[in-house]
Amino acid sequence: MTLFEKIASRQIPADIVYEDDLVIAFRDVGPQAPTHVLVVPKRAIPRIGEAAPSDHAVLGHLLIKAAEVARKLGIDQTGYRLVINNGPDGGESVPHLHVHLLGGRRMDWPPG
Image (cartoon, rainbow, N blue to C red; front, side, top):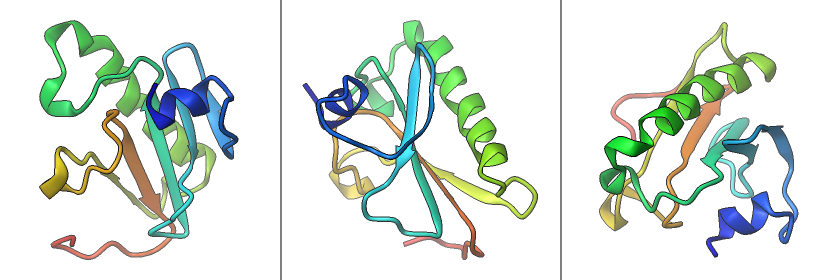
């Protein structure tokens, strides 16, 4: 079981801000912005590079719900960033696809 599956099954506590049948969203324990939430599919997909055509619906749902969480947290008007890391060089630390929702401050470009 991945760390995120354990959070979804309540084996590990988290500050959950949204949940439905397909995804769970919770605050990152090491925030990189004033608002830093992870939006995670409950079904483990190791990374975006391993997503299959059968994952189409959950991937779309993941992004729509990230935008909904941004509205709920009040960062939709000023702007936010969505980040998906893929592999070690991409910054992936948990092998379970997730979207970082970052906001509450100006995001510079390029990142990292």
